[in-house]
Length: 118
Image (cartoon, rainbow, N blue to C red; front, side):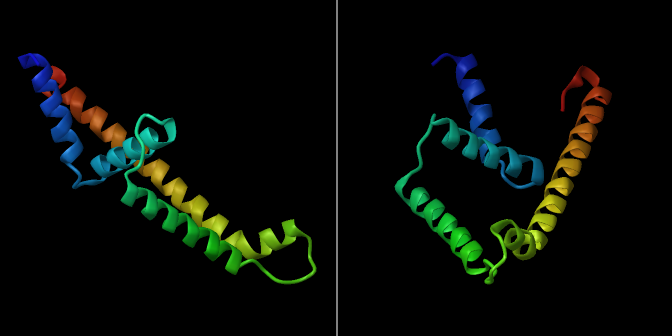
């Protein structure tokens, strides 16, 4: 490994280890799920168990909260899960707006600095 590649590798490792503030945590989380979904990396055994337990809890929660009655399935969906749908939509909206604002501030800060660097 030559010096240039080693420097790039060290910067990449350092960037992946910085997991303290919002943009870095979101970037690392996105990188994790993107690599899992794309198939470039597979889950370790413990990670697979953790993800399985998570999804079992989500499915159990949703099936346990399914409304009882004779209504059609879509009426049950609206009646039983409308609050979850509204809260999730609000949370996603806040995340998208916050992410765009953070990117705009970072872009403006980068343009103001001499040389365009940090």
